[in-house]
Amino acid sequence: MAKALLGYVGGPDPRMLSEMRRLQQRVQDLEAELSRLQTENDALTAVADGHSLLSSIEMDQREPALT
Image (tube, rainbow, N blue to C red; front, side, top):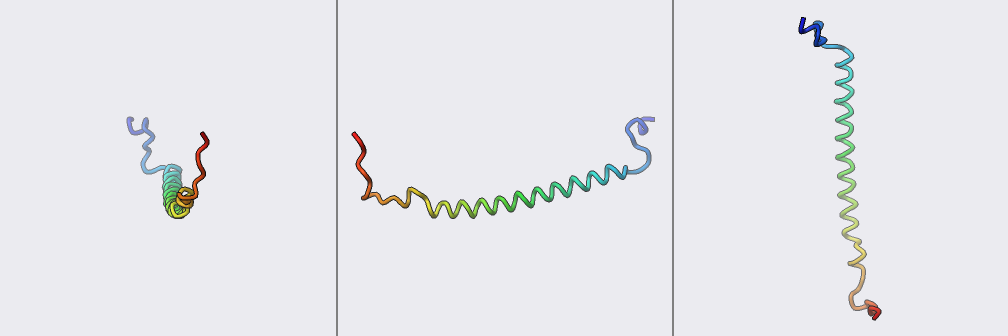
């Protein structure tokens, strides 16, 4: 009786298995996208560090501050 109340009727439900496979595929897709975005972000960060605005300012050509 308890098994019937919990929905256990002799084997895995095909709909549940299908949903489980779909969710596992979605997780794999999201993990792959996360990895791709992290790689892209690392590359952009490296480029941004190399072209920093502050590093392009020459210190001897600074304008005087207004007083």
